[in-house]
Image (cartoon, rainbow, N blue to C red):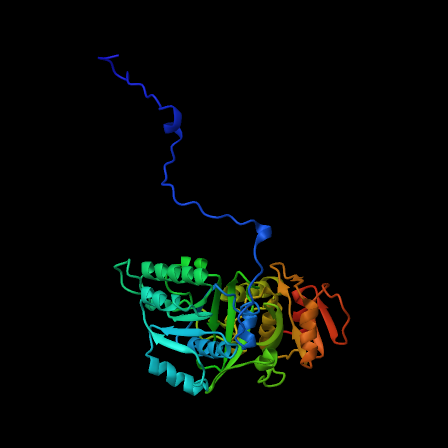
Length: 427
């Protein structure tokens, strides 16, 4: 109809055009049934038990690992020692650095006592050159130190940019899966402790490891925060020496061995890190504050959780911290994330405020609720067994949860007020 408004009527095409796809067809690929998947290949053993433990029993061939940590914490030292151990098992390993020259790597290897290793090293930052070099004779494992120094030729941006980091990591990961070589990517971290670059980097890899600790402290902690082939939140503990990293055979003894007897403001916490029980010392200092707003400082624990514990003690147990500076520290450089540490932190705070020590040779653990109840925690028997192994005689624990008998003296706590009464807080 002509000469009228709204007279145009849409007519949809019929037949094949109506169902035409709005995407471009690619090449078909092969599908594999789940019950026909081949058996897993043997894991690569570095010979460093703590490192193999965190990786889930060794490094899986064809996998991609991301290792992050503060500058100077010992990432390169750990990897050089691990690669040297793999070489002893007739595994071909390559260490590629984008930050150090070959002679610098050789000098470090000499200091670590591994200069006679068959480990191959190189300096290069081009992903294309690295892939061309490795594909002729793919190694069992290669290390890229660091991913922020790598670049690919298909992008114009500088190395370290978001696009280059993502593209480089994706290309190296694809190479590892295609040729069956495991790859370890070393990542820089920001001032907040997060791996620099796009967050998608941690999603692309199979395993994410963090190397933690204070550079001025001798102990280092290797922590798994993601692992597709093993448990997460597993830790390995090392001691840094002038000859490199040494495994801590008894981590609990390492963290509590230097404590100065039974003093006020100290509490021993029996925690679980990954699959292993570990004992650490909580130290607290409560003192009069010269400022109108008292200080609250915490090292090795969550500051928000400290604020919650102080609020529960004040509102539910009438223990006053107003006008007091509060300092809380986890000794040894270890960071504790477990809620079961609530009761040990509260015990250290109450002990420091009252000046009364906790029962000698005692460990303590339990989660504190907002109504001041003590909630049960997991693996109580494993915690008690670890305490007994190190010579402790007394355990403060939440009620219930034990499945086996022990010769240790057990004090079950249901309410936080019981701990306050036992430590006799002075007003």
